[in-house]
Amino acid sequence: MRSKLFQVALLIFALTGMIPSILGGGGQGSGSDDKKYLGEWVGSYNDGKGNTGKLSYILSKDEKGQWGGTVKWINQDGEQTADFKSLQIAGGKMKGKIEGPDGEVDVAIEGQFQGDKCEGTYAVSPKGSTEVVENGSWKVAKSAAAKTGQ
Image 1: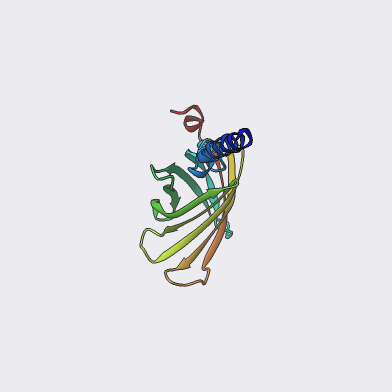
Image 2 (image 1 turned 135 degrees about the horizontal axis):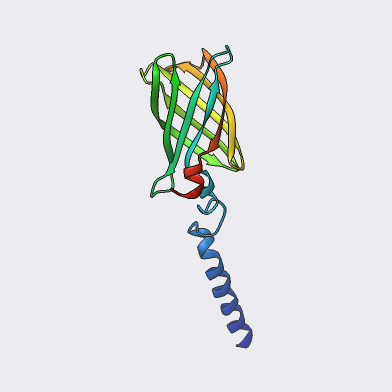
């Protein structure tokens, strides 16, 4: 009888210890680590042809835990803005897609976070194509306001 009680107690203890990880609390990707990515990141891009411009990302997470945000950049047509169609941030890496302002191109964005900095590449393709018509690099740093939580 004593052995049976011990087994039941051990089972209850094991299950209550596992429930938070099953429900997504306290485990990897729980959100506490994600806070360092939230907010505005500002910097510049280089299109590989000698053209540079200002760039910023505003990264956010919705109530369902999905990443999202906005990309702003300045090019020969002035200031441009696009929302991420998809965005994944995991293991210090960022991968996302936006649609160009005219709707005719898709832009794939990839980057690597290193503390308060992130840098990566982008590739522009005509809508529905895998052909890359432009690619370049970018560097951003977390804005001072985002660091202080303002």
